[in-house]
Image (cartoon, rainbow, N blue to C red):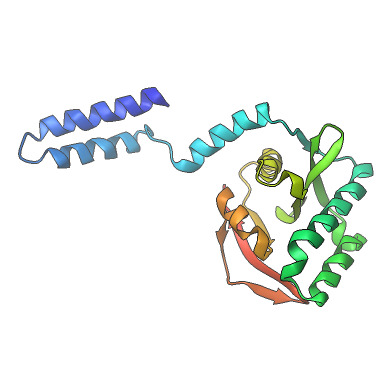
Length: 204
């Protein structure tokens, strides 16, 4: 990365000198454009993903796909965190609707689960609908918020969905988190059966 940036700077200087003293700014701008055209600069997402790869290797909280026997614990964690952080933003109808979803075999069928662990303790979970690449559940124990657990779950999941566009209907509490990951809002906030959500998309 450093070598590429140095080469881009060199191009900027060469073009600046070529255009002489009258308009060096134009020459430098052309040099920077040439650097970008030849892939000498990476965008922010590429740099973040490079850091993510390192973070995955050095993570204090390992993330892996969950076995079927572990999904019950993941759903229990989802309900616990929902009650603490999400439910206050929902009506009683919305809270009950979410509780029913966690116990609906039809809704849960086809989900792929990932878990983050602190030792043997499950501290975070993510569940995605495989055929649609739609995140249905993503929850982290409150004691582990702002420690990169949710991000690590998302990065690990993406390894199994390379190049896929990923969608999510985010709760009000989760919108800033998904924006930080690179998701963009595709519609205004909606409410169905008491469930408040904002449709969002991540394009690889």
